[in-house]
Length: 137
Image (cartoon, rainbow, N blue to C red; front, side):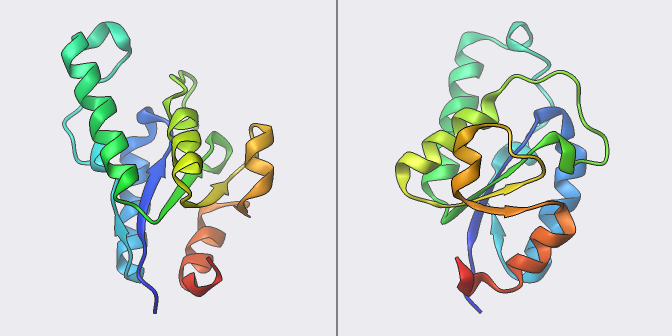
């Protein structure tokens, strides 16, 4: 089976739920590259961190994306507990990955025009099924 390095882009507030999703992806045999999932909580909005910490968060995310084969954007409708507050960073991550030529997937509602031109899954379980057959990517 083709093993993928996958970056998960989603709302920061859904971190706990995404940790469980990441574990399921890794159980299939892929590697989740989203180091933000392993970091201690420090982001509750731009005012909660220093300018230097903001740069570190940004640089780590971009480094993780560059080291990935694929990005999966998980939109709020795919989450069990959608988060109201949204910083929008996941949209930037998706665009950066697109510019880098990564394979791309959207899980949940398509939120913008760019989401219409990539692999799509309506929910987490469908995504996991698709990742069991990565030769399609």
